[in-house]
Image (tube, rainbow, N blue to C red; front, side, top):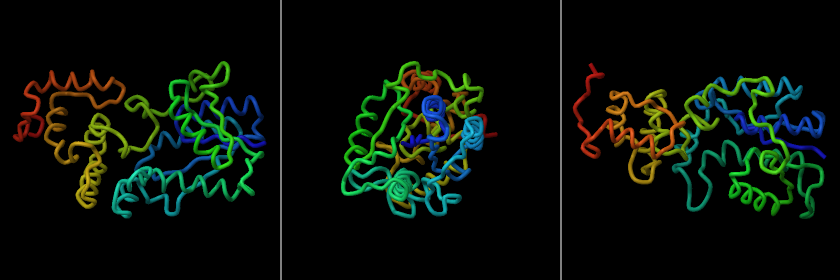
Length: 272
């Protein structure tokens, strides 16, 4: 039996990797990662996933889409002409991760005659508060013939912090709640405010992509419509961060911009 850690580069999957090696031995553990362009995957996430793997003594196994070095979520969706089609998953996740993942499974641990593959178990970094995600994974993968496990949710004494293993987690966690792409296409306004403040080139590309596709990323407005508000938020010292709860964050914004909904289109002081 081989145990494949769905190794995203975030803290949760790294903790699963450590726990899996302790239980099954490194010779039975595979760290499966989808490498992403440095334009969207922070260089410190790459440092982190390599340091954890090196300390475990395991070489990372990559399942990458073609031309992954230059493909990004925005470019994938722009090329395909949409964010998603109908009830399908968002196109960036499917093409950058899901499709290469299933291709790798089929090439290395295929399902034969509809029987459950007894040679592999897939390990995910969902914790006990992510019951819905666990149930979805079990449903999808068991129907395809694969076994799954969730060490952070189901095993006793899960690793609490990756620092206990002696590796510092990615610096992105100081602002973001996750180790996902910069400018995650499934994120909300609070996250896109970080992009506006910290990654102006990515912000510009996101606006251009929305205009070309003809649909907004957000439910109620285009990113370009948020630019005046985000500019004033930045000028008023609103710190770009996902660490603050959404309700509290937007409450702080309303205090800083008392005339909510009456955003001035005149430049603020920091524009000079």
